Image 1: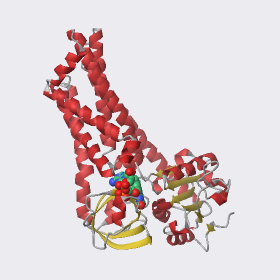
Image 2 (image 1 turned 120 degrees about the horizontal axis):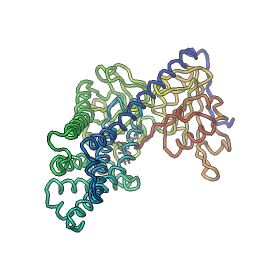
Image 3 (image 1 turned 90 degrees about the vertical axis):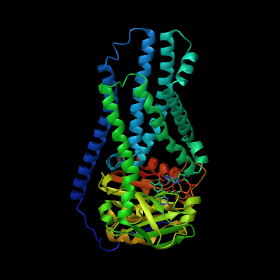
Image 4 (image 1 turned 180 degrees about the horizontal axis):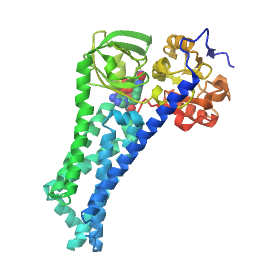
Length: 476
Ligand SMILES: Cc1cc2nc3c(=O)[nH]c(=O)nc-3n(C[C@H](O)[C@H](O)[C@H](O)COP(=O)(O)OP(=O)(O)OC[C@H]3O[C@@H](n4cnc5c(N)ncnc54)[C@H](O)[C@@H]3O)c2cc1C
């Protein structure tokens, strides 16, 4: 093995002895529960689309299609109903509802939210086009005149404004455009989605007659919109406010880990009631001067206790640079906990934790709480330079206590030849050369995504099941 690897296999007896059978039993139970919740959510999502269409059919939607023009109108209604339902699913996915977060993880919920955005936009555009051409054909007028008449009806005009706002949100969410905007600007634009939905609602109830008084469709959609609005209001605004007031989190200590990295320790009341787990993240707002207006997601870098939380932050942009100067005594508002980068995601007997750069932070806390079968646990810290082996002393002590092997892999990657996540001096070595149990492991990997992706690719080739790979993305 190349010289730079620090290997610390179980020195002395591990503190935590875990029977392999009990670990396996727990993981099987966790996996089947999670699959059950995922299946239930999938059924609910498809069920909502089926309900939207079913109610329309039950209301005589299909019988009304007697001419080509009416078929166009029906196509417009169907695309509108499906797009609206997908929009509701999108909002629910972004509402940070703990049940959804626990079943599929916040990052996957947001990835799905982003994917649906495109379909919602196309659906609404086709909804408008089908209706314009359908109504125009029914009245034997041009599509242009029909569109002009839409503009004269206030509720329809509002819905067109909503569609334009949604298009702006969609364009600014394209990765290349999103990256060119400060996060706060992008976020502010993104929030206009709520206004867009608000603008589009009146025409559904007033113009089409589809949701007329006394119809089942009216009650169904009114109930759906109300539940979603309540969920959003509660989980995005009310509960985070209550949480912050209840736990009264205050910064107690700021430790400089490197020139641009700090660990921030906080103390609060009754933190066990948060139900946070090691490896999870919160959205943090430090209520100090010049800091209160920006909120950032950071993972816990130590397992939470009844009265303490800790995060470790690397300054990578304007906002995080300011956080280097946070002072003890600063009040902190939080939203969370979020994420399933936790022990609850385990499904295998072995475990391999890979922290790259500041991605070491959640790996450090996860290591503290995850069950370890000695001989089947490896922690890999991947850094550009030795200074970037953040929290290495703590991690080494934990590895020793739990019987895990620690590998610290330091140095730049070989940029030529086949892409690799390993330092150049490791040549053509692969993950299974370093971690013989990788195929029977859950792999947790966190760090810059391009490097994390290479680790994942390597593990998949070595036989790690896809379902056992857990990746916390530091950007959505
Ligand atoms: C789930 C998760 C956990 C994270 N954990 C850690 C951690 O433990 N330690 C650490 O150092 N970094 C962590 N990060 C990354 C950290 O949040 C960003 O580096 C930081 O927010 C950048 O802010 P900035 O103002 O310095 O940079 P900016 O230039 O403002 O932002 C750079 C990029 O950071 C992301 N970002 C900024 N603010 C937010 C936000 N409020 N919500 C989502 N994304 C945002 C955006 O993708 C943005 O393009 C985590 C990120 C995520 C998503």
